[in-house]
Length: 201
Image (cartoon, rainbow, N blue to C red; front, side, top):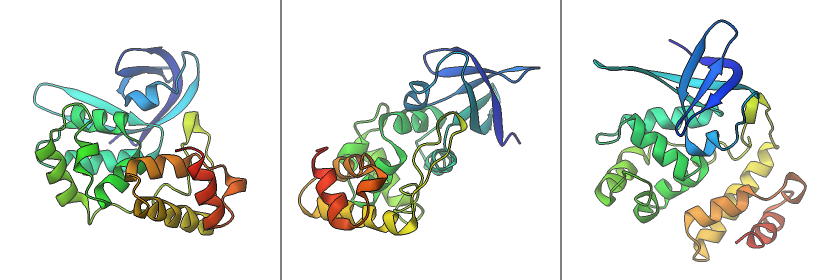
């Protein structure tokens, strides 16, 4: 119903942003990770999910479309509601969560608020065939409407570097976080990505 909202951040609360579109103010619930990137007065584009329940209508917003897509997959898992999904994406980036799912890392997922070990295991079981391991590695966070990207071959290099780090014994979360911090000029081949990523671990 509402694909996105573009406007000025009027104010911030603990778990939401009030966006002024010029004619209306919308309260948009967001992850802690996204809220920490915002400041009052900044102009942003939030990709939204409109949630309708018997007792409430709420807007959930994300600075990246891939985060919204993952949010929608999460709330389809029995036992995970919108608040739980927001908490999970606030505790882990979309990239970290995808790699935790692919490596059956229920321990890392269960560290998110409101997500127990059984729920984490169920999440992995239901989403392992639905998430794309490489999605998002070629498009850094689109913060405040600014977009960036790297070449597709660099995306492959990053993916292979993460797999190599996991094989070396690092957790999927540690590996994906380290690789995501490697700047574009240092992502020309797998060896370069691996060496640069090890500096961040």
